[in-house]
Length: 103
Image (spheres, rainbow, N blue to C red):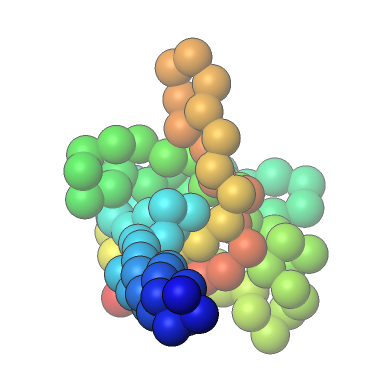
């Protein structure tokens, strides 16, 4: 009986580890910067994602963890961003916490 419980526990842990490793980050987007609008504490980048969705990504020095992580994006660049996503009735928004890549 103890061996059966140990085996089931090991299988459960293995399934959990594999599912966590293969889970795609739902708080990340990638796409092309369509427009930039400067604000008081940073700027908002309008990003058209690979799935043809528009996100308004708020980028500020404080939210990305300091000036060493802050980048000024330009129109036409391909970006990958990670952060907190929320949706209104008609728009998708993101508070960017990490600029993963810029091309």
